[in-house]
Every structure is written in C-alpha cells, then in structure tokens.
Length: 524
Image (cartoon, rainbow, N blue to C red; front, side, top):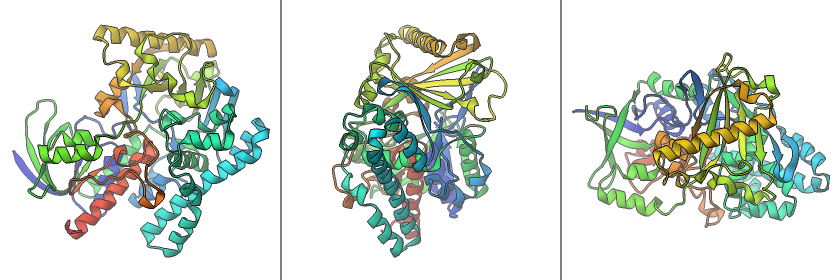
C-alpha cells in the first residue's frame, strides 16, 4: 500500500468533481482525482455501443459564450471557454401535442420569446410580458449578486438586492403556483413555457419556481448549445486543467473509504483497482470533494460520520430518473424530414401542464396506448462532429423511475425494453414515414442503467428533488455543498441545483468553500 498527500482529493469525474478539481488546481493546490470508471465525465461523456457513438446525457445546454451564462465565468477563469466549440441549436425546442396542439417553437431571447408566445396566445400578451420580465429580472439579480460576492462590490450587492425582489416574492412557491397565478386555465401556454421541464424535474407542482426561473432564464437569454464532439470535450478540457497544473487524474480507481480524524474531519481516502479489487492505496487530503450522492459518500465512512451524514441528508427526496432510447440510423434524420434539434411530444391524454410527470410510471408495464411525454434529440441538426457518417444517433428520452424495473426478472426486463423500443420506433415511423427503414441498431437505457452507470441512488439524475424551500430568502439558498463532516464537500448536483449548469455551479461553490478552508487551515 502506498501513501500520498494532496491538498484535495476528488472522488468522481462528473462535471461537479472536474470543475472543483480544475478550480482548485488552477488556484495552486495539489489535486488528485479518482474515477471508478475507465472514462471521464459521468453523465457528460460519449461512449460507443457496437459501432454507435452514444451521448450519455447531454442533449442541450445554455450557451456558455454569453457573459451571464453560469458556465462563462468558470470556463473563462480556467482559460478553456474558447477551446470548446459551442454549436447553437436554434430554437430552444419545438413542442407539439397535448394542450398545445399544433407545433410551437420557443425562440432565443426574451423579446423574441414574448413575440412568439403572444402571437400564439394573443389574449395573454401582457401576462406573458410580465412573466418573462420577472424571469429575466431573477436571472440578472442572481448574476449580479454572484458578481458582487466575487468582487466584494457593495454597489453590485445593493443593485442585486434591489433586483431580487421578484425572487423574494415567489421564493417559496412552486412553478405550478406561479403558472396558476399568471396563466390560470391557459394550459397550452404553460406547456409552451415549460415543455423542457424534464431537463430539471418531473412535477411542476413540486418544482421550485426560482430554480425554473434561473434555468429557463439562462436558456432564453443565452440560447441552447451542443458541444462539438460531444459533452466529453468539456470533461476532457476540465481534466486537462488538473493535469496541466501538476495534478493527477486516475481512472479505474474505486474509493473504498473516507477516513476521518478524532474531531470528525475528513483526512484521507482509500482506493483500490476496480477490476481486481487490489492495489490498495491511501491518499491523505486536507479537503475531500465528493462528486457523488451524500449516501454514497456516507457509505465510505465509519459509523459516527455516516450517522451525521444520514441525519443531514437522509430525509431529502430524490429527483426523477430518465430513460433514453438510442437509435443508430443508416442516414441522417433530415432525409425523412426531421430537422429540429429538440422536439417535445406530449400525449393527447395530457390536458393540463400539471400532468407533466404522469408518464414517469409508464415503463412499469409494457406500452399501452400512446407514448408518455418524450423528447426527441436530433444531434445531426447541428454539425456535431460525431455522426457525419453512419450509424447516426437519434435519441428519444423521457421520465423514468427505478421502481418501474425493480421487480422485473432479467428476462422480463429485456422483453419490456424491446417492447418499448418497438413502441417508440413505431411512433417515430408514424410521424416520420421511412424512419424504421433507417434503423440499424437500437438501445434502451432506463433508470436502472442510470443508477448503475452514474452510481446515483434510485437513478436520480438531478440530485435531490428541486422542491421549494421551507425558509424565506434571507436564509439563503436551501442547498449547499457543505456537509456535517469538516473538509468534505459535495461537488455534484446533490450540493446545489440540477443539470449541466447546476453540477458545475455546485463544483465551483465546493471549490470556493474548500479554498477558504485550505487558506485558513480549517480554523474558521
């Protein structure tokens, strides 16, 4: 067994862990990152199944080139913003079916979004303008407050506190409550504004309004983007920031223990070779960045520390999981009329926006009737750099739960996956005649796949459920990377908000807190 020392050890190479590790390495601290898999990025990766390249999770993110995008400052600080090619995906999405009926496209930009929505729902024009103005103000206020904290600017802090009034007014509301306040009965309009809810959660009655405003505000302000070469390009760039600064990135290393001292502080990580379960090593660390769920980190600790983690995090509900049906095609989807990057399809049985998550239990059985709400991601609608030649990837994704699959035997699970692939392919054939003739391979990943690959409880892809806080805005954001264990931080979506941006923000905040501890030697 070898014994090494670093300022920071990062467990996991998802975007949160990579961001935390890169920022700490950039600040001059020694960093060792341990990844149990043999590829980087977690959900932000691309992998091969047979001869088909599959995008693990990312279908669209807000464009980081906008100075007010949450990723812009992080990537600029690391010097890699312009090393990544951000491909605009056009309108944020097309949505059709359900209460909205005929297809509607939500364009980029608050003014353009208002004009398109007002043209479709003219009787709600004034309400739409107020609603979008509120989202824009919340988005800008949070950005101003972030800048004020980083720069120590009293003027920006004062301005941010003035701008944040709409956030304070709706701080404890759900998205459904705000939608009802502004658009009662206008179900088509609600669907037009929240069609991509699956990028954040599954139930507008429980989704925190402020989180929606920040996330959707970022999309509308910056536009959607796909990273040329796939999301792995961002993961590789972040990893390179660590190694360029003298840090170490080790793959195929499974963390087996987080050691704590007599005062309950994290002081070391033990890890082994994942394939052989040998080559035990111990790495001392002044801080440990856990790019995982609190329950996963807690399982690596002795009973007293584990109990403290369970007391802090054990009662928090988890987010939704997802399925993704991946089709390898012999030609680009544009040959059969599929030209949009992102299309949300709602079933006719969905007549209210608050029914958005009703289909999350559909995969507990074989397909019956219409497909549940789903999104089609057509990666060749942009110059992705991955599918110029066949097989070409087309992905259909939607809500799922691990409970849908827990009781199924292996044979039952395989048969049900095939039945769902048949149903999804059949719907695509119905909407785009000729689709089935293009299919050369297909693969269904479900909540169980997400749980296994990402090592996340119940396949929760977005960390904790994005519930409204129970305390007013003066108490601050309800989620933080801090844990009850000194020197241990959650550099993942479990330590903040959800999705691509949320994971990176959580990693950045974890790095900020860790830096303060390193600077003060843990005395504050």
